[in-house]
Image (cartoon, rainbow, N blue to C red; front, side):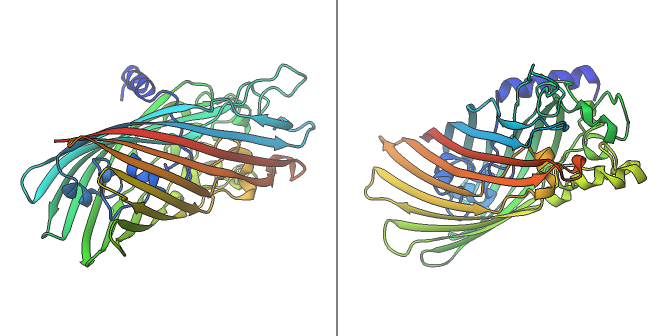
Amino acid sequence: MHKKYSHALAAAVVVALPGLSMATNGYFSHGYGTKSKGLAGGGIALPQDAMAAANNPAGMVWVGDRADLGVSLFSPHREYTADTGLYNVRGGNHESDNTLFLIPNFGWNTMLDEQSSMGVSVYANGGMNTEYDNSTVGINRGAYNDGTAGVDLKQLFVNFNYARKFNEKASYGASLILAAQAMEVKGVQRFDVVSKSGAGATDLSDNGHDLSYGAGIKLGIQGEVTDGLTLAGSVQTKTYMSKFDDYSDLFAEKGDFDIPATATIGLAWKPVRNHTLTFDVQHIWYSDVESIANPMAYLLAPCGADPEKCLGGDDGGGFGWDDTTVFKLGWQYEPNNLWTVRLGYSYAKMPINAADVTFNMLAPAVVEDHYTFGLTRKVGKDHEINFAAMYAPSKSKSGTNPFTGGAQNIEIEMYQAEVDVSWSWLF
């Protein structure tokens, strides 16, 4: 894509998603849609709104003609603590700025006939959104001694969905997912010594927001296997994205930053009237994306022997993230015809290893537990108002700075809170 058009599209994404941040399960959101978020992001077998396609496209044929418009207020608190001294990481305790973000979402679905539907769901991911301010004291200027440091990742997904019933108890669905992401990285120019391009690398840091775009496919199925028990599953391919040309000296494969594939299975069980239990298991393949999965260790001896192990190389070092599996448990209760109450809990082991904390100061995706609560109130015959809240308690990860031979200890830490509100129209 021509540079000027790339910059124009990047600006559009930045404007559409101001200050996006959603670092929960790695950098995937803990859920999509207010009702699902009340169940800790679960409910793949319990479609309830036009955001269902973000979890399982097969569910859209069961939600009817409707539209859902929502917004989340997300508050992540990130910090790191490092030993003081003449290191390339600024010592002391430092908190990231940017702790409040508004994140919109929208879904629309229409029944084509009694057996099929089509719709669109618009939602977001993110999470690498940190900013450690510059310091004017002594030689320690910024997190990496190169001024204000941080990463800002914004991802927008537009999911075009088709679903069809096998019969009155089962369905399948497919989605075409178009994605755009904008990335800005600041304050890491001093790592040019371990970049493939070497000292003075121009596409490493402080180049503003760059745009990447691409597409993927999501497939899903669900069915009631016995009275009160529904099973469902979905799989989303890796979303192959164009490269971040302005950061080709930083990310592996000359700026490649694809979006990992995921797979989810789940059940919804109604043991008694007005009560539903949900259980979902989701796996995220971070290991298939070199810029996310390759460890920092590549930047030491391997980089000196093989330039492709350096930053920007075809197998360059990165954040060192492992795959992660997310377990989501939810309970939904309908005390009457007007109200619905939801509770949820999810757990996912953090993808970060101790050896990689130095780079992950930029993206401290260390939280593991999420506790959620949700409500729905019907308003007349054709409207609903929905609410969800999430709290992820503080979690930390400690390691050493490999560029000091292990002499500097670093700890990264984060906790999160979120509230989500949406309005639903039933046609």
